[in-house]
Amino acid sequence: MYYDNNQRFKNEQRRSPDYTPTVGPMPRPNPNTPPNPSTTPGQMPNPMTQPRTEPNKGKRVTGKPKGMIDSIKELGTPDVPETKSNIQCVTIIGQVEGHLSLPPQNKTTKYEHIIPQLVGLEQSNEVEGVLLILNTVGGDVEAGLAISEMVASMSKPTVSIVLGGGHSIGGPIAVSTDYSFIAETASMTIHPIRLNGLVVGVPQTYEYLDKMQDRVIGFVTQHSRIKEDKFRELMFRTGDLARDIGTVLIGDDAVKAGLIDEVGGLGKAVQKLRQMIDQNNNQRGVPLQ
Image: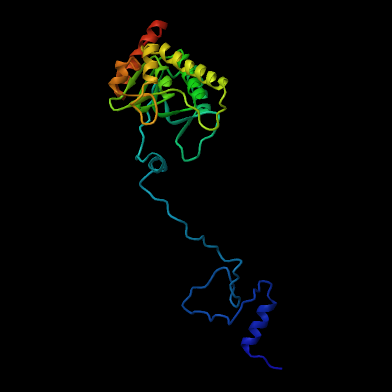
């Protein structure tokens, strides 16, 4: 039986240990292709010994550092200046969340996050003053009073500023600092304590509400210039709120009532806090930096 040269070449290739079967007709060699040094004459290239080529990877955008891109995504600004300061800012925004979790679409301030933060600020040697910024609609009464008591018991100077609103339990939090500010357009709502959900209509329920309300009134009058009778009059006033009783104080009205110390913005609040820090350091004998 006779074999042509092509068949003899195929048989020799099958007997080779580097033989790799192919599907379909074998490609004809291109005479213009330079020889592959990994193969010998008369031997087909082995794909297992060929150098692997990496797939095309996405190119990283150059010109902007990764930190700047993260700042744009998170804060909407190209960069946030990093300054070393002895003042720490604490924000109370949205609704003060207490023992019950609110729906995820609500903007909340969790008191279990604020309390450990205040403990850390009290123990920190680098922080000499705390700036409390409020824009809250109120929330859980006991959680708000817990935050207020923590702020009021701090040994370091504290200043609060009400921006937008400091409603309901936000009032005791705003007056818990050593000095308080309110923006000209900010408002504060003073109203009695209310309950949501099922309420048992027994005398003990009303007595409990009355005692809790006395706790709020006592704290506010103790940490501000407002008198108890004036605060109760604002709390139970009718005609200012739709379908409810209470009073809305805007800017200078809160200062005239004795609830807030001064009308001002961020610049005044920071300046006042720095003055209090210097005075506190002088009393302790700490040299000024």
